[in-house]
Image (tube, rainbow, N blue to C red; front, side, top):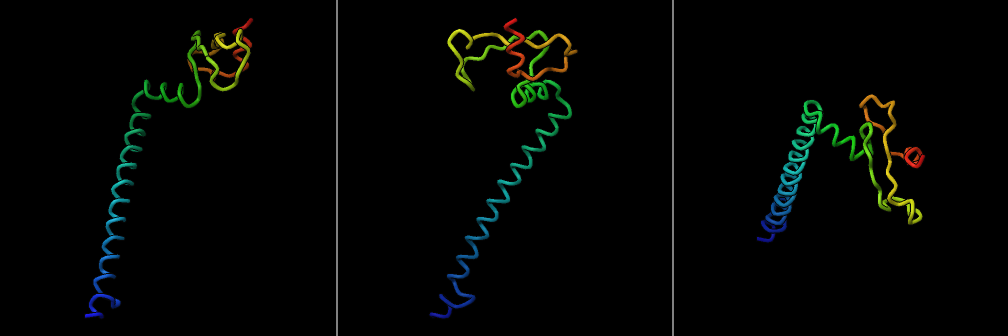
Length: 110
């Protein structure tokens, strides 16, 4: 009986092997879901220009020509009079979007 429970091919070894198998199955399931989400995002990036614009705005801080963005103390703390100054895109943009950088803030002040 002891060999059946604790041996090299025993029930305890079988139980641990089954738990490991279940963990791998769960990991495969999660990776499959993640892969599907990435494939969906790739499809959107290839076909949906509105989605591409949203990604550029969020991840790269891009703005359209003649668009005004107000920042309220997000990254750096400025003096109270400079916190709500607008940032505008420069006119030479041709609709491709410009990064909303600090040097554009200086242009908005002028």
